[in-house]
Image (cartoon, rainbow, N blue to C red; front, side, top):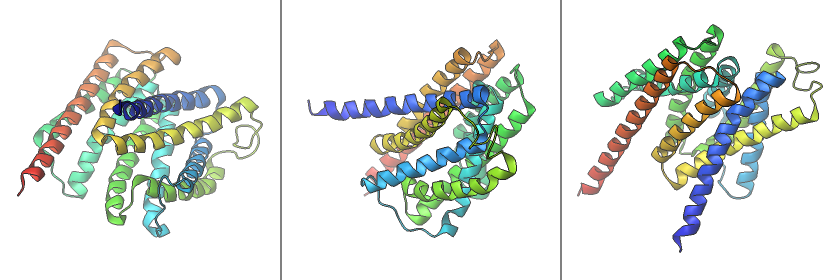
Length: 309
């Protein structure tokens, strides 16, 4: 019976991540579409609540902060700020299906960046899985009846900045010998300060449509709830990866991918043609193949390490 509590904790962690990841997409979309809440201001709320949450976590002993120089974290804070803003703008301007599939392009772009900038090589089978992912995203976007040029610009910028951020995070963690939570503990307040400076140039601060505008109590509660859920997503990601593996989390991510697409059709009445469905299926198959080959690659590396005398 000793295994049951551990199994229960794992199941609870997966359920929390599933619920939070899906809720944050739908809640943010609702705030943009129904309330017209400003994008940068909502991102600022997310960053502030994330930093407060991490402060509580370190106070409770969940992790120990590591002293870092601001100059060491500045590029990450800038890219962190950019990828969250652009992905939120993509969600605001596109259907949930197009938003989700555009995010899948992060994998091919990361491969390209690591190949060109870092000289990393990838097996042919890994490169071939990028073809159906890219083709599927193209098919969905081409046949999307709510296609938006501006939305695709935001989606493209979001993918580029997200890919750079993920590559830099991996490099910085290795360089500075820190984990994700230690890094985010410094990034979140720095990114918040950047947005505080930028927001007045792009969005109203006071009055109608501003972050300190005449919002109803229910709107304020929903915005704060969105920030809390965003923090729960980050926290549960670290917990799942720490208690299972990155591959397990990615496989679980495929399930969330399908649920989110279905929810977009049901809740926001996003139209879905047969060609779009083929595009989604094509992308999903490419992602599954990529994950399978990466898993095989990791298992092969572990076997070689074990066999080495």
